[in-house]
Every structure is written in C-alpha cells, then in structure tokens.
Length: 312
Ligand SMILES: *[C@@H]1O[C@H](CO)[C@@H](O)[C@H](O)[C@H]1NC(C)=O
Image (cartoon, rainbow, N blue to C red; front, side):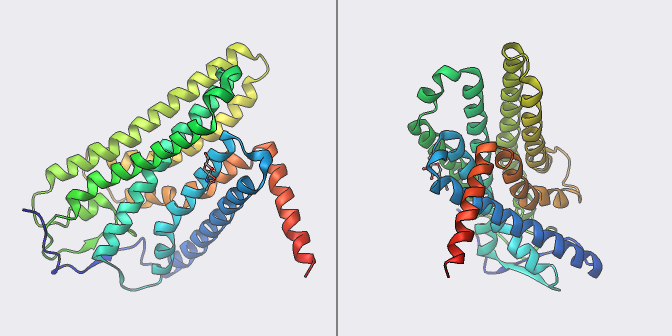
C-alpha cells in the first residue's frame, strides 16, 4: 500500500526543553556561544587545511572533513532550536521534520565512519610507520570519504523509506526540541513496533559498532606505543584520552537513545544536546588545536588575514 495520508498532520509541534523564562535565557546564551564558536572554529580548520600546502596530508584532510561535517551536524538542528527557545508555539512543517531527521542520520552516520577512518589513519601512522604513505595514500583517503558518505546516506535512506509511508491521523506533538526519529514514529496511527525495532537495530548497530571499533583501535594503538616506545606512552595516553572523551560524549547519547531496551526516558532529550552542540564545538579543540603543526598554520592564516585587513 504505502502513500500515507499526511494531509491531517501538516505540522509537528515540538515541546522544547523548558518553559521557565530564566532557564530559556541561560540556554539561549549558552547554546548561541557554543554554536557560533563551534562553527567559527570548524570553518577556520577547513580554510586552514585547504589553503596551507604544508597540511596536504591524509590526517589533516580527514580532520578538515570532520570539521566540515560538524558544521552540518550542528546547523541542521541548533539554529532552529535556539530561535525556538522563546517561542510559545514551536512548530516545524511535516516535510521539514522528515528532511531534518533524514540529514541528522546522514551526517551522524557519516561522522561515525569518518571517526573510524581517523582512528585507522592514526593506527597506520603509529603501528605501520614505514608503510604509512603507501597505505594512507590520497586515493585511500578519497575512498574512505566516499565510503563514509555512502554509508551515512544508505543508513538514513533505509530508515526513512519506511517513515515517509507511515499513516498519520492527528497526534503531532514531539516531546523534544528537534525531530527525533523514535518519537516521530510513535505519532503514526498504526502499529509501529517493527519499524521501531528496525530503527533501534539500524541506528543502534551503527553507533554501538563504531564505538567498539574505535575503543579497540585505541587499545591497539596504546599497546603498540607501550611496547615500542618507552617514553611515548604518556603523550599517547594524553592524546588518546582526549579522543576517547569525545567518542564517549558523542556515542554515549546515541547509544542511550537508540539501543536502550526500555521505553524512552525524559533525560534522553537533554542528552541529544551533546551531539548537536557540544561535540561539534569540542572536536576542533580536541582533534586539531592540540596539534602543533595545525596551531602554527592557524596562526599563519590569522596573521595573513589581519595584515590583509590593514591594507584597507
Ligand atoms: C576532504 O578530504 C579530501 C581529501 O581526502 C580533500 O581533498 C578535501 O578538501 C577535504 N574536504 C574538506 C572540506 O576539507
């Protein structure tokens, strides 16, 4: 059959985060600062890597691509969430809601695969240093990126093919601040048990799977460093613990939202804030600005921009 009748539901009402005015003001300030700083930081990284030929190496290309995705991850939901904070009635069109969910899952899925690619890059650099340039060639890099986007798109398509065909007959209230797939599905006027199971399996599988792959690759790297370089362990530990922090912050909420076997709980709507605002803000700080060459390149770019302005 298919071809659900959405004429009854033309818009979705979002409940939002809080109704207290003081809280709204605080959230408005905090979210705006995190969002704008995150976008500027990520933009700076992309521009620096593209314009500086010293940085035309796989690791920096992958970092720039991570920043590029992070800008989308936060821009899909944060601006609407921030502008909605003070609105009495927070609504989004039915189609807008589906588009938002679709892109949340495309960028989320792509980012997860990209994080694996970055861990692979570090693994090869540390554990197979002599073969680094042959293994992580420009071609491998492009292949990894194509794989990441393809997996992200397929992951999202599989779920949304079923969602667009669901029948909706009236309920249109989503208890969150963005269109959240598991909550959206529950609005359909049909038995959605199997679809919910599919979403849990699909999103749960990709987030849990990626999480374990990342943790295992970090353990491998640490063990290798520990065996081969007597003095390198503390440096490796400090770098990897920063990475692991981001991974836990990014995957924790996803795993909780999608793989939790019990009914959704009120806290998970707050957890999503980590993925939407906090990790896109932290990624540049943790992955890139701790890197010495990157710091030098960013300073070079900034001073060029500043001296360019003096000409006018
Ligand atoms: C992503 O990586 C590719 C090479 O692997 C590079 O050519 C491209 O510029 C990068 N994209 C961004 C936005 O940094």
